[in-house]
Image (cartoon, rainbow, N blue to C red):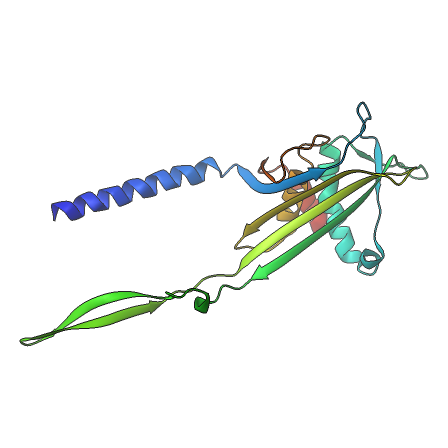
Length: 212
């Protein structure tokens, strides 16, 4: 009985420490980021216009959703929308993808979670196997991409990608956070990939804009 009580204490302590670790990350959204390019030294972000690909033109509603999500991230990086009738300094292309992975119990050779026990009937005792079927939720891989090109020359200047995985899909809030992570270090590059932490609420304007 004493050994069991000690074991329960260790389990409780582990849960408490796990809870503290989770709380430490409650204020941030984590994403894996990769950035490429050489933004010219001394060049200010300037004005921008979002350029749609032909495939995006065919789905204007989805394109507007992506554009509304990336705008707050661009503005935090120092860019501003081009004035009506003016030429932008940079052209921006954006994209996003999501893939769903269904985890089948057959993927695990030990998917029958159980163990051996014993049955007793009168004076007779024998072994038996008790099993239970494990259920796993689908996993979602989310990724966004941003490409900045010089409007005058068409030269690519900066490319950023951000990805994360979760048991949840892709909505306006998550989309905005991924774009915020992608442009968090602009104009710098760094180790690819690397983890970037986005404070919760940093992408709130994107979610609001996309919901309108």
